Image (cartoon, rainbow, N blue to C red; front, side):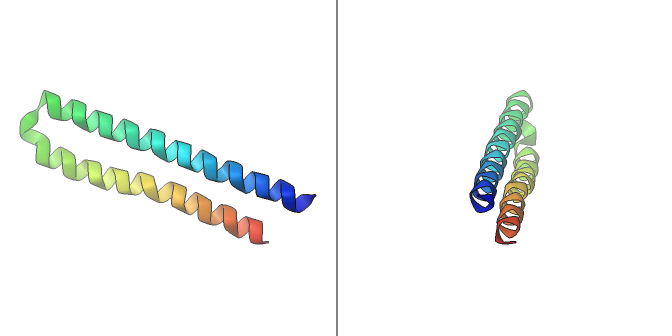
Length: 74
């Protein structure tokens, strides 16, 4: 019984991390496009900052899933 509950917990943690990462990426990209529409001359700077932000946002779900699997293996 405990193993199945842990598996459900890991699934919920992975799903939550994926949803959070998707929402975060969507917000970052939409705000970058909004800023680019307002000030097209800053396109390069906005794009490079967006890529850094997206990389940091993507790191969090990967770490969360790794931690969830480590907890599952205990």
